Image (cartoon, rainbow, N blue to C red; front, top):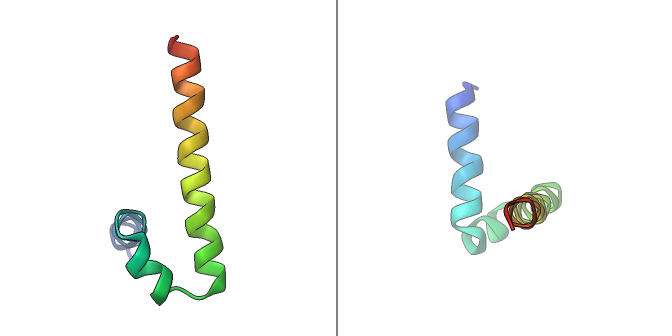
Length: 51
């Protein structure tokens, strides 16, 4: 599978989490939660470095 399709599907899962939650298996749900936790961590860390 091409890299651009993988990236597009991952972004779609993050943009529409309720639809992807119903569609994804348990391992995909874990990755979705990990993506949100990681994005939140990076956002807070960036804000702390700026402030």
